[in-house]
Image 1 (spheres, rainbow over the protein chains, first blue to last red):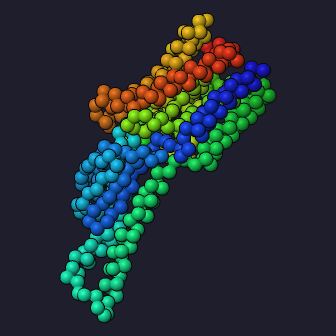
Image 2: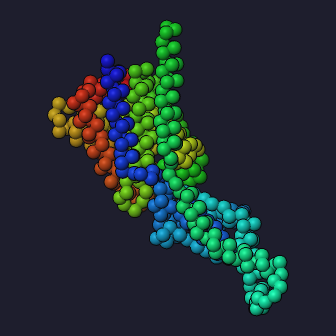
Image 3: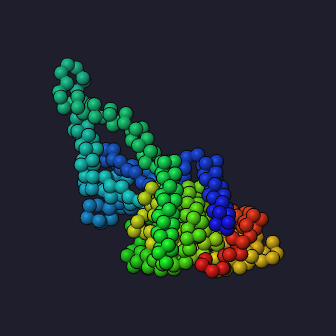
Length: 198
Length: 205
């Protein structure tokens, strides 16, 4: 009798928690910090936020090279963003330290930086551009396309950054609860089996 | 209040893991078959609570529910919280596997402390005392967890006092809300099932 009662009461607590989740918090929010970074030309942009979308403001950003040497350090602004000029051609490991034990990192490989820079270098070398008359060379067309793609894709890169910070889905939440009750079943099975032997 | 991976040094991680292991072994020893369903339900509540975000203050904070876990489960809150944290790490990427030990210790130890502090007081005849004890239990458990997190960060984030202050201030709304939740849980249990509360300091718990 007592067992049934205590389960019912505990279930009530769980229900309360679930109702709170559903009513207060449509996009599940939570405790994890994320940093997302990408290179454009000779600049690296970083965006930092807690999962659920709250911006990580005033958080420390540390940039390391491939050997683990610290290149520079900065703080995110009130939109959770921090930008810096690429100091040196290397893999960049960007570490976000949001305090209270929250840390995240993101690595930009050298190839990506080279690519972002390559576009810029080409643009500079071709600065005195001839009037676009007749025959455009293959290189020039490629350059133009890359340039405009860069600009057009910028919002998509941002969207990607946003989607990185999505909270847990209902599947994961329900799945987790299911796991716990599965474990309960296993525990009960073994306890009861032990009892019968005695 | 989950500490992320790669923040703490190995000695701190090992200390946390050792503390958690000790607590879990005590908890498992005390786990009667009748208690198992209750542990599972409170573990689920803890698992889900981390998704309830409290949108007050500058940082990102969420409910923890380690007070009610400790009050109703005693040492059993160690296994309960371990399971919930492991699933949070795997499914939500909160915390992580290497920091599982220290995170478990940081959350469960205050629960056990509150169990010893308030377990008897909650059973007092006078309603006012028991309700005040329930509120303090929820409040203090979060507070102590904040202090423990600051202690764990002692070797990485230098000044203890400022980190502790930061965490405690950020969690002040959570403490109050958890105090109220614990109070309502106890008030509810007093009405429908006072034996459960009286059993807090009974055998096997």
